Image (cartoon, rainbow over all chains, first blue to last red; front, side):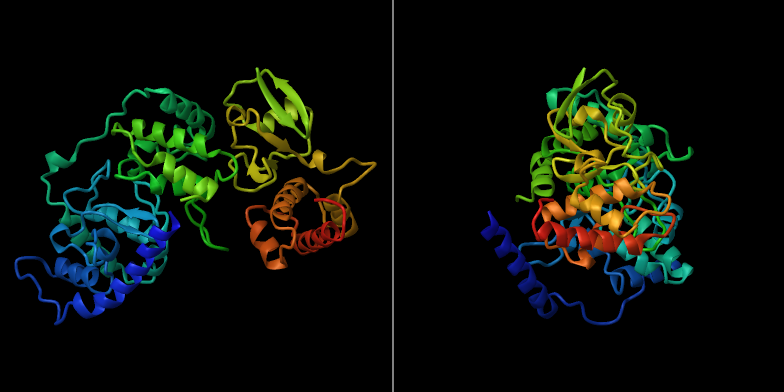
Length: 269
Length: 157
C-alpha cells in the first residue's frame, strides 16, 4: 500500500525536524567517574558525534529514540541495525577487540563483513584516529552487560523442514555453499553463515539485501566482496533461501521472508 | 535431467543440479561464448541473460534455471547474420584479446532491453561489474552507445 508507506516517510521527516526541537539533548557530556577515561571518551563519541543510537535504538511513533530501550536494535534505510545491548543477536559475542577491528577494517574474525548503511559509516570512520575507534569499541562492548557464560551460546543449526526450507537448501548448495562452506581460511572461501548476524536478527531484510545486491565496495575501492544474485534467483527462490538460512541459524522462521523477497525482486511493497 | 531453455531451444542436461550454468553451457550444450574468468562472480566474463537480466553464470546453479529463458552471446546473432550489438562491437573494434567481450555484450544487451534509451552514464554504470584487462573500455562503451542508436533506429534489441 504505497499511501501508507509514503505517509510513514513524511511523518518520519516531520518528526526528525520536530525531533530537533523536542528531543535535543542539551548541555555537555557528563563523564561517569566510575568508568575509565577510554570508556568515557567512547561514550562521548558514540552518544554525540557518532550518534550510534540513531540507528541502533528503536524509535517511538513520534520518531524519538526510546531511551529505555537504548541500543535494543533499530533500523536504517530498510536495513535492520542490530541490538548492541544485552539483546545482541550476534552468534559470537562482540569484544572490544573484535569491535575495534570491525570498525577499523569492516571485517573481524568470526563476524560477518560490514554491509548496507554501516559500510558507509565505516568508510567515514576510517579517517578517525585509532584511539577514538578503540574508545568507541570499548564503550559499545560494555553495552552488552550479560555475563560471559550467558553470552557464549553458539547457535545450533536445526534440520531444514517443510518444502520451502528444503527448496532453499538446494539453492544454498548450488549458489552459496561453494564459498561459505569452505570458511575464510581458504582462497575464495567465505564466512560459515551460522556465524553471520544477518541470520540471527529479527528480520530477513538485511540478508535479502545482501543476497540480491551483493556486497560491493564503492567505485575504485577495494574491500570485502560478494556477488549479487539479482536476476539469478526468482522471488520464490530468494524467499526459500532466506527460509533455509534461518534454519541454519537454528532460529524460528521469519514471517517476512516472502515480502522482503517480493520487495527486492519484483519491486513491489 | 534438467531442461534448460537456451537461446530458444530446449536442452535436456544430465548434470548435478548444483553445477554452475557456465560449465553446462560450455561442456554439455557446446556453447563456448560465455567465458570462465574468476569462477567467483567477480569479473563478468561469464555473463549471460536469464529472463532478460544479466547474471553471472559461473555462480548460478542450473537447479534455479528450470523453465527460465537463458540467452547467451550466440543468441544475439550468427556469424552470417550479426545482431545489432555484435555489429556495433565489430564496427568499433571493441575487442583486444576479446575474452571479456561476450560478457560485456550480454550485460549491455540486458540494459538496452530494459532501457533502450540508456545514456552513456547509465551504460557505464551498468557495465561496472564486468572487467576488461586489456583496457578497451572506451571502445566498449562506444560500441554499446552505437548499438543503442542502431536498436532505437529500427531493428530490435
